[in-house]
Length: 274
Image (cartoon, rainbow, N blue to C red):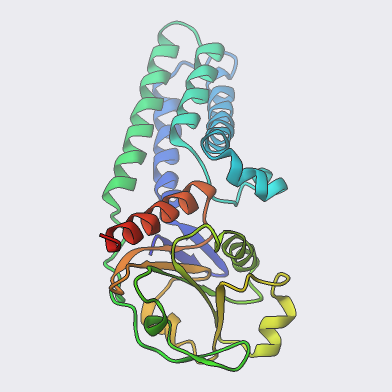
């Protein structure tokens, strides 16, 4: 999984990598850039804002159809979906506009070094451990309509996408709505498993009617949460047609991430047809 639980919050690893890099950037900035009328403080504050703004705008430009469906969530800074390239471009524009001479060159070098270090940490994944669950388990759970369902037995030759959620988790409800809206476009069996709640609790806060092609299951004893050792909810797992884990994700998913999973599912489905 790609997150760490900190109290009620599920913090993505990418955000954790930013903390030491941002701190190091601030320290180096105060040591290397001249302090002319507090220019370096204003530059550093503007750099943080411009990077976040550019990263969000870049993510929206890369997947406009997905963000259009999310509406005002595009303004929520806790919503995932940031483009490193977009952030780098706007950060460089801000640096060119605000600084002059040697200070500009040093600042641009710092921006590029911080960006490359962050991308390197995301590629290395030092905080990510191997998943404890690598095969789709043959667990029998109760559906919302009372049927006994074994997701591993119902997959056939299709991949399986599992969502673990709770009704008292805001991001879980958003992710459940997104999965319901996209279940017809994902070439996979989609299964939403409620963790640790009764049917009444799950139905009370569930976001409207779900699509008929998505299976809703109850796991009151949290077997799935124990098996996956998910750091928090929502948690998503994508298995291929043989039940092998392809990818996993903890926390809300960005539109670009949804598109990547749709492509994974489509590739796996096409491979089974030959």
